[in-house]
Image 1 (cartoon, rainbow, N blue to C red):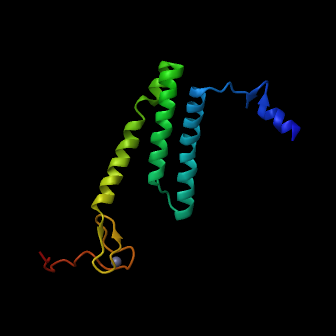
Image 2: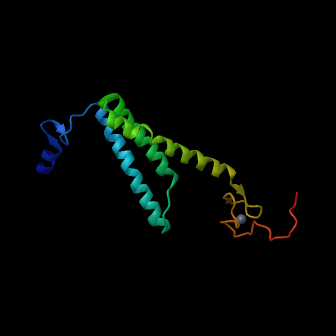
Image 3: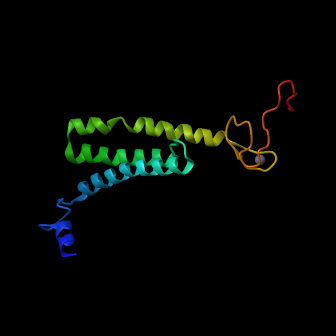
Length: 139
Ligand SMILES: [Zn+2]
């Protein structure tokens, strides 16, 4: 226990890091950005296929913005600033596309469950949603 304490606190520094506001912002950015891999991995293992949950894009956006702030306001390093200056664009774009997809989803006429856009069957009750060819479409 004494060894662990000594390892955590070295010369008055937690983990040997000199802590201040921007160090906390930078490390929080690292933690948030890293956690997206765990979220994506968990979702993929759970569904037994490769999936990218919407939380992945939120964690990517938040982590990248924290690291970008750290680079821009504290480090003021051009390489570091450039590395995070544009990564938010695809993260934000994926969140916008996801939002539109959710907005397009409709309700099943039989069970009322949510049906994704362009689905052929209701994922809740299995009702066939696409009419066979040649059948008249009700107005
Ligand atoms: Zn249904």
